[in-house]
Length: 449
Image (cartoon, rainbow, N blue to C red; front, side, top):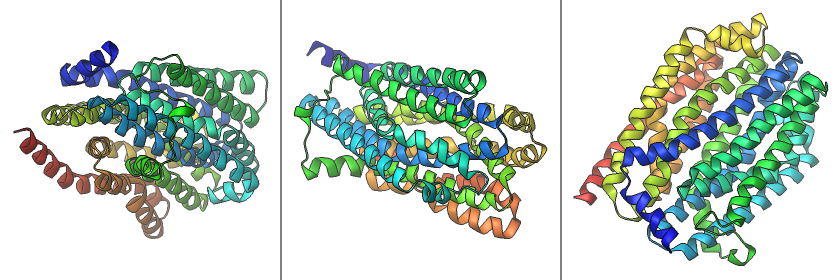
C-alpha cells in the first residue's frame, strides 16, 4: 500500500515538466537505441548490395504489422491501467495487464504461423521485387520466428511506461537493442553470415528483451501483476482493450500498408529507389523517435492525472510536450538539411541511391516541424480514453492522407512525387489535428475551473 501511495503522489504532485522529463528521458533513450539497431541493420545489410538494402525496407513493413497488434494491446491496456491506478483500482489494473499480455502472445503466434505458410506471397505483397525477394524471404523468416516475443514486448513495455516506470522499460529495450547491434557486427562482419546474420541477431535480441521485460513483472517491480489467474476472457474487457488501443493498431497497421504502397511505387524506378526510401525512412524514424519518446513520457502523465481528475495537469503536460518537441525536432531538422547526401551515403554509397535519398530526406526533414502537434494530440486523446478522436487522428499520417497522396503524386510528378508524399501527408495531418486539439484543451480548462 505504501508503494502505491508513493507512486500516486509522484504522478499527481510532481511538477508536470519535471515528471514528463523523468518519464520521457528513459523512453526517448529506449526509442533512440531501438532505432540505432534498426539503422545498424540497414548499415550492415547495405554492405551486401542495393537489393539486400532494399530487403530491410520490405521487412520493415512486416515488423510494423507485428508491432501494430502489440501496440494495440499495449497502449490499450496501458491507458486503462494508468487511469485505474489513478483511481486506486489495482485489482482491475492487474486483470487488464494479464489479459493484454496473453492476447498479444496469441496474436504474435498467429502472425508467425500465417507468415510461414504464405512467406513468398507475403514479401511480394510488402513490395519486394524479383531481385530483392531472396533476401527479403530469408530476413522475414527470422522476424516471423520472433513475432510472439516482439508483440508481447510492446505490451510489457507500454504497461511499464503507463505505470510511470519508464526506467524499467528502458532497461529491457536498450539491452535487446545493444545485443542486436553486437549480433549484427559479429554474425555479419566477422562470421560472414550475410542477411541470415541480421535475421538471427534481430530474432535473438528481441527474445532476450522480452524475457528481461517480463522479469520486471515476475519480480514484483510493478503495481499491476501478470499471471494466468488474473486472465479474463470477458468480452467487455477484451473489447475495451482493443477499443482503447485501436488508434495504435490503425497507426502501426497503416504504417505497414503505407510501407507496402511506398515500396510498390518506388519499385517502378528500380532497387535503388526502394533502397533510398528505406534508408530515408529509417533516418527520419530515428529523428521522429525523439519527439515520440517525449510524447510517450506525456502519455502516463495525461492518463493518470485524467483518472485522478487533475485536468489542469493534463493541459500543462500537453503544452510542455508540444514545446519541447518543436525545439528538439526543429533543431535536428535544420542540422540534417545541411548534410542529407552524407547521411544517405553512410548507409549505401551508391550514387543513384544518394541522389534519390537526398531529395526525399530533405523533404521529410521539413515535415518534422509539423509532427509534434499531431503526436501530442494523438497521444493525449488515446491516453484519456477519447478513442474515436484518437483513432481518426492516428489514421491520417500513414493512411488517409499518405496513400492517396503518394498514388496521386507518383502519377503527376513521377519519382519526385514519391519523394515528397510523406511531407505533404504530415502537413495535412497537422492542419486536421489542430481544431480537435484547440477545442478539447478549452473543454479541459472548463472542467478544471
